[in-house]
Length: 286
Image 1 (spheres, rainbow, N blue to C red):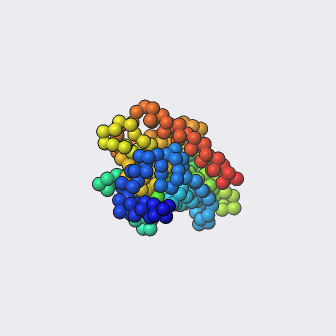
Image 2 (image 1 turned 90 degrees about the horizontal axis):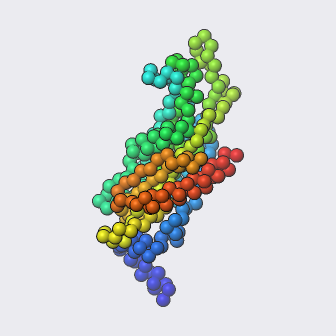
Image 3 (image 1 turned 45 degrees about the horizontal axis):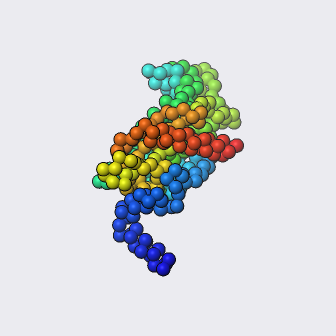
């Protein structure tokens, strides 16, 4: 009887995936056994790419993201002669086959490479994680340009959460050679390398929004949605919190309006998750 019921569930999942996901969410369950308020385990490794000045690989469930940082000497921009700069880029590998955190009905994509790049760059700057003045070697003449390349290797859920964690961890792992100016020319010493001077850093947590009925004003919120859950839910909320528990960004895509209480619950959960990720980063960097 148990085997027969299991086969019926698998058949229903195969034939009607959207109805299957909606049904178990309505009943308070998730396909992987988690509660609505439970995240998947996150793993982090740093320094794996020896050709880069800093690197990190992040895995959240079936989502995997890699990031490499490479420093190059450049001329400061005319509008900010005292600053270096960060050039961030996010790409999906051909293996993922999609550019999304999870699509709502109709195939709308929440996060393209371009939107991910812009959001991550914005929250890194707004959190003041990297003081660009510290990247300047000589005002108006020479500075560091940090190329931060993020690649989504596999996608099963909150790609943006993994991308932010990978970029932050790679920058914290990065070291640059010392540079001195002699006769107006830079002399680079590869023998002496220094970590970047960093400040408070952002961490992202994503939530999927679902409703039992179209007319139902009560919404359900799932933290760390899988790709299937996000696809069959009506919206996504992404919350960025710094390691010192300050809210630095809130992004909502699709779905019904959320009450203040719903938003506050998500923020509290994002802060709890940030605390967990800070410990992960600290333990990994030791």
